Length: 288
Image (cartoon, rainbow, N blue to C red; front, side, top):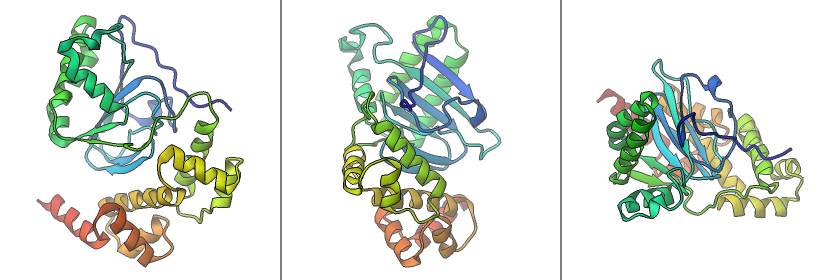
């Protein structure tokens, strides 16, 4: 099987591609994939999981992010809100022509593209301020949409509310078997995180020995498989704590942990909070 590389073509009369998705079924790449283009994604309202390279997290009220070439990721659209939709903008670094971003006036945007190579998630204020311009790009004629895009990118350069992700991991190399191996591992975890998953099972899935698999996984994600699995389960636990009125023990077992004490330790280590404190703080946030 060849790596799952998304083929992206610019829109007719345009140097980039932009599309709005109302349901996740509209998205052709509804699984872990990558592509050589930069991708800017805005999810309006709703909640869901973020699986971007070696980064795992959960968003609660929409998200605005910018990721660089060949960073593997899952689709972001959820159907958790009536007004939920997703806007995806994809472009190559030289979409304005060779050397355009070497001009002095483009210095800040060039730095934005450099940061995006590791992935950027923007804060709420930046998301709310900038998104109107992004939505206007969808309906604008060719010249106007290009001007709006540059203006939108410039807005992002002025933001101090952002988080860099994948700080210790490079994008996967195209043309190797690594992508397929990691795809199978991610799919296994996504489908069976509530079950016992042992290293022998994962190594067999990738046709590697346990030591070889552990070295490969650490090289590509900068973390052990056990740490990745625990982070994935904690991400699911966060989702349950945010959406379900259930006990901490139920959340622990429903997110794949077999021991409540181990769940509490991992949750505190990964999030910095005890599950009970997080749940209480989130409820207060909703009330206020």
